[in-house]
Length: 103
Length: 103
DNA sequence: CAGTATCCAATGAGATACTG
DNA sequence: CAGTATCTCATTGGATACTG
Image (tube, rainbow over all chains, first blue to last red; front, side, top):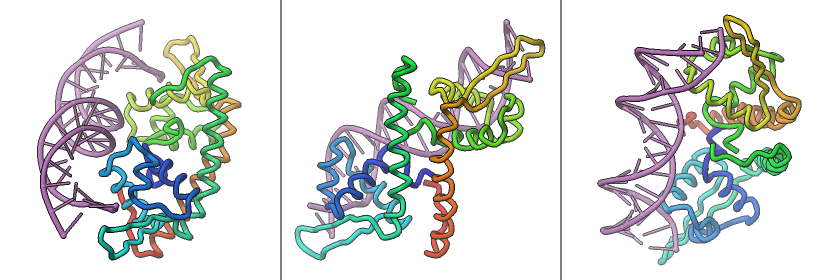
């Protein structure tokens, strides 16, 4: 399941689900705390799993656009379910008087 | 979202969802590769988040039973959705002629 | 612009030994 | 039985510098 979770993948996926296509630099700007290395790694991983499509334009300067694949879009419902659970859970923790933890 | 994912949490949760209640040692036997340390850590974490209930019997030798909380049961649909996506994804990878990866 | 390559610090997780 | 307490090693991830 590490395919869609982890520190960065959900964020990347949410941006791509909301934007149709995004350039590498646009993703960097949308997720300021991620390093190029991590962004590249995660995108390559998602590409390998046919969730994200990588389109390279043979131009100078280079342009690369990332978008969800047809298959990747099927993840949307799962991701949304996880997200809404997460949100409700924050409220629940609050009701219990507990603070969100790191791990 | 690390609350319900990671290396061991999904496995633990599936066992508890299928068993009503399980002792520490039963969980160990059900998940042979997990160490006591990890099992304890993960269970404490799940307990903190009100997903798992820990019942200690004041006996010798000690007995501790773990079960899903009422609140924790609400996770079932999310977990099932993740699981069925995972299963379908294996087939999809196969169709693509790609092998499952570590990361 | 969109990456690689390298190094290094922090974290995660296994093995082992011990305890109420 | 159901854990703690340490120690250690492998893996992650961040920072930085370089490149087609």
